[in-house]
Length: 64
Image (cartoon, rainbow, N blue to C red):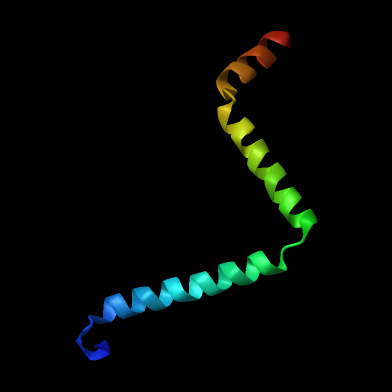
C-alpha cells in the first residue's frame, strides 16, 4: 500500500504524526504554573483584541 500512495500524502501523514508526538510530550511535561500562565495569556489576549486602540489614542490626546 505504501508504494501506491503519493509521496505528498505520506509526507503529510508523517508531519501530522510528528506534530502529535510533540504535542503529547508538551502536554505531559507542562506544570500547573505553566498552564496557569498560558490561561492568563489567553484571557489577556482576548481582552486586548477587543480594545479599540483608536478611541484610546484619541482620549489620551484630548487629555494632553
